[in-house]
Image 1 (cartoon, rainbow, N blue to C red):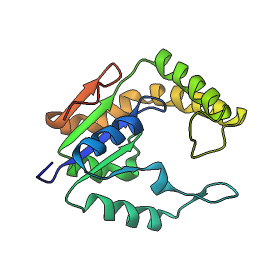
Image 2 (cartoon, helix red, strand yellow):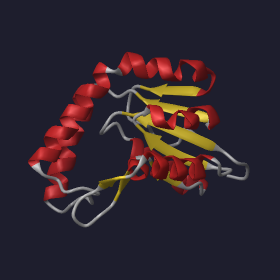
Image 3 (cartoon, one colour):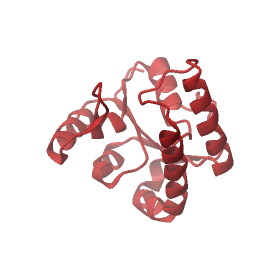
Length: 165
């Protein structure tokens, strides 16, 4: 991709955010960022939550670049990403498919067939389902956050084909 371009991908746990971000990054050469890694610092004994100041500094360094692809669940602390994005992709995948993918991912991670940034425990499996349900419960609030930017929003109700840009 020759010109600067900024993509913000939003969706629930297991909606395909990271996969889509990686695919767009591979085809465009634009770096992608998982905003979970802006919130949390990886540590061998478990992730450590960054301070708001650390988080904001890292996030601002990302969104002030010429091009980026970021993926998140639409946290309020990252609202400037919505403003600066050229394209906002909302992965509005039905809960049934997301919940199925959570379980399949957890099984694959425990069998060593899929890499994981976290330890795939029963506790983590339960948290994933909880976050999936919370996302659905807060969907109206989330849609209000992106309402001012609808001129640059693409809502996808099925898993993406990865060739949308």
